Length: 135
Image (tube, rainbow, N blue to C red):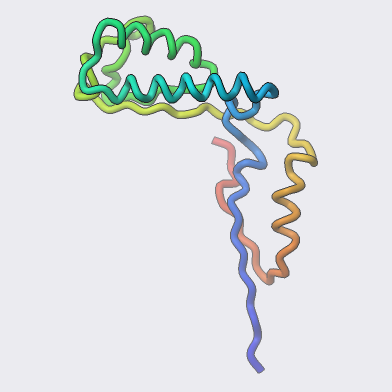
């Protein structure tokens, strides 16, 4: 008699951490901040930076630094104090924006319930989870 084996796998990282910018209670503030992140990303992708671009990059970074990190290859975008752009454009070294995370504190049952409901609703013989650690 054949036996059925049901296996399920879930990514439960969002149960424990989430981007700070997405945890803002006022959605209009979060939308404005995400728009600024988009503006900064567009500036960073330019082939060459004008003096105005450089000033905008610094201003946007300063406004967003509690929510983002700019990952730089070879550390060539900013000076050491991150108050001045020293790169002349994206050719000086690629960089990208990472939204910084925060531990959910506390992990409320309201936040966990949607995930837990999906996990427990499956009649599984084996269950795997991924990305369960905090970085």
